[in-house]
Image 1 (spheres, rainbow, N blue to C red):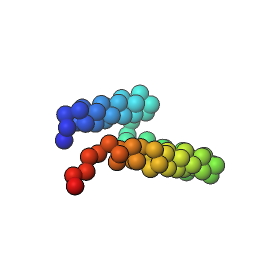
Image 2 (image 1 turned 120 degrees about the vertical axis):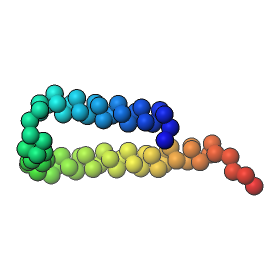
Image 3 (image 1 turned 90 degrees about the horizontal axis):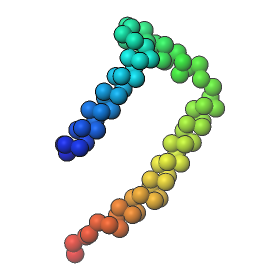
Length: 78
């Protein structure tokens, strides 16, 4: 693993732990997971449609814009 990738992964984990602790404190993790799942279940279907649409747009943009540029930059031996 590249050192930069490892550093970024550690930052994401630490940030997630800090955000979790700031939001829920040091409570029982199983209870807070149930609370989070209850919130997600009670969301309206339109929220999931909007989020999946945004994910779809980002994915298609990745396929159409980023991958062809990346492929054009790679040198293929003949």
